[in-house]
Length: 282
Image (cartoon, rainbow, N blue to C red; front, side):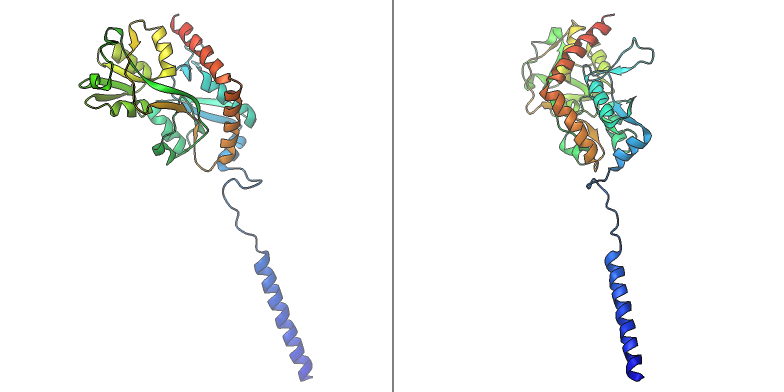
């Protein structure tokens, strides 16, 4: 009887031990955040559930983004808007555009006020610490826009000593202006504001992206490009968004690659440069 009782006790202990071991081995692992197989990022889930992609931009930057003043709702148009339509279509959602100053644009990405930011946005090491960027597109150069009467007065960086140089605030153009030795750099709220200050003689020049200068030169015959060359002032554009959303980045990169390889970006530059000039001349 004693032997039988001991046998039952040992058997029970073994059974409890095996159940405990089975319980430890079968406990589900905590769900990981991120973009693992079969998982959607937080941003992707938000966009899908909302049914629209919220795009932030800063207009007044043709041919990338500018306001169609003739439209009833003052619609923002441009090549970046065309790209964003493609992104929204790929995601299967509608497109909403929020227009704001450039200085507010990037903080709107990190705070989640907008899903993505476009408008000639350039990825920089400092910006990459706070947000993610897509692949780049439309490489160009920074130029110095001046009043035509001073076009040949500024031939080198040394000629800018003591001058007042403007640029749109919080942009890579402003960073370029700040590096001009002996010059005073002024950040303006928008490119149109900087153009007005230049024409009124309050600025001696504006650092502006090469692609953008074309439109302003066409409908401002009193302005011209100086021969000044900025060192290391190559400019590229990318789409900015919050970090940790690789699935959204992949979709954006697919669109960028498609539009680059097909020459669509170049076509949009020509198309929206023409449209910007036509609308400005009316």
